Image (cartoon, rainbow, N blue to C red; front, side):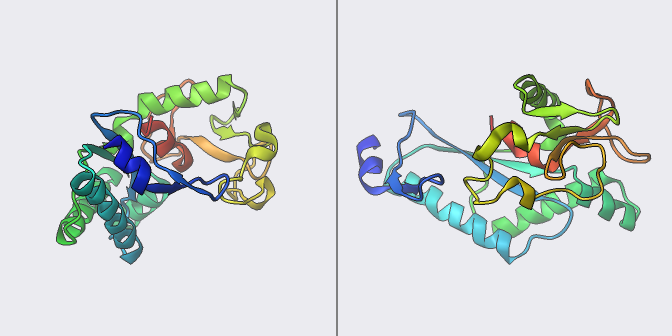
Length: 219
């Protein structure tokens, strides 16, 4: 099926905008990581549109080209929005996330979207995320602060940052954080706050930032 995929399946290369043949690395399987929902609320039409599209592509690869598609999906089950909503509803973040994850799965089943082979939850991959952040720090692209946060240093990437989505470092940022070097730097690890869920790390107790989670689990 390699030859058929090369002939008929195209991808858009983000850096150039060109359509190029889809080249698969393995003959026995096509691996696919899908970034799933942040489970703090019910799924909406935007979710439905995305995952139905993914399902169509997956079925074409499977049914037409005979590929064994190994799809996994990341679930963000700890996040600022989850913690905020759980506090408003007077429930634990874990129970809230579990409820809306199951609700999402039911919606996908109603749309006949094939489920992934496995769901990868952020809370089940904290050691891998911490290790990934350590590697980014070691390469000089992130820095810890005295407050226990870790930020990605956008300026360490020079003019390479934002090419895929056509943004500049100065156009992004997370307000309300005063311990970072530049306003556009974003959090990879957030120091624990009173009453919030946390895990131990080399930088102190805390939890992953939203930006790092899928990057680490997709590896």
